[in-house]
Amino acid sequence: MHFFRAISAILLITGVIGFGAGCKKTAAPQGQASSASQTPPIEAPAHHPDGGDATPVAQIKFFKGSIGSALGLQMKLVRQGDSLSGNYFYQKVGTRIDLKGTVDKDGNVLLEEFDPSGKQTGVFKGLWKTDSENLINIVGNWSKPNDSKQTAFSVHEEPITFSGATEIHAKTIKENNKKLKYEIGAEYPEIIGALDTRFDRFNQEARNLVNRKVAEFRKDVAERSADETIESSSTGSDFGVGYTVGFANDDLVSVEFDIGGYYAGAAHPNSYTEVINYDAKNGKILRLGDIFKPGAKYLQAMSAFAIKDLKAQGKSKGADSMLDDEMILSGAGPDAKNFKSWTITKKGLAITFDSYQVAPYAAGPQRVLIPYSALKDLIKPDGPLAGFKN
Image (tube, rainbow, N blue to C red; front, side):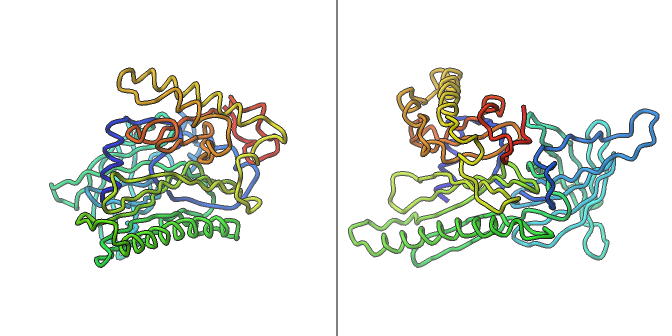
């Protein structure tokens, strides 16, 4: 699809810009509310203390990734000391495959998979590594039992700490219209397994957002097809939506949607972001002002930090930088519309500046992480971010 090929090209041009949001685009997990769950949990030791008899605390972790070219793999693992258990499934299929195995002190992972009848169907062998955001990546090879042929796999942890049986599953919309020559591939998160209705509004908002964008694309393609002044193209059109979970627990869910597409005959694809920041305790969609004290000059503080950070990013890239000071001052100025794409992460507020906002289209979107320490005097002490500190 043109849009996704173009995004790949943009990423090659601009490089990877990290901002502490646990990216890539999408999630899974567990939930009942407690006020304490606002503070990200501290990791429990993976092994028994020397000479101790204490049972290690179970850690529930959710991953997304792929095996070979098969994308859309979602995995849930429970780690208790050296033991691992859980399951995985492919979004397109939905059938869960049970997992059981170990991870040793050096991070070597061995996971055996079993079908519903209990028959072993595969083996994962990989390495458990913690990244700079304190999230887990597991990379290695998958094979059938007693088979020397191996397929590479990779999964990354999503920043999700639900309790109970709550999880996030990716819902998909796929469509291939041969008459109007377009393809649609869209994903949105759905939270399932909660013992109450706290996530019902979030599910409705996420579903409605993506369905609305898909409907708008269909309408646009139909209108362009009927417009005789627009030249026909053999390449067709396409549209995609992906999402990244910035943070999710029993009280808060923060998701960024990456939306983009290509219209036949256009010079290049277009892309932009939208967000849903959801207060599950109160069943409401959060506005940026909801997390700060009344009257706080949070836009000025966020703008000052973002402008300084973006300029520093530009300098670090030297001659390869496409960041422009004039565009930065305009696109990251203290205006609410400039900070519409914000998500909550464990380390700070992640801000996405869409293409054309602070840099030319070829530079792609730009991102800044504003640490909570830079906003500590402005954050509402009894608000949604009260438990976040750094």
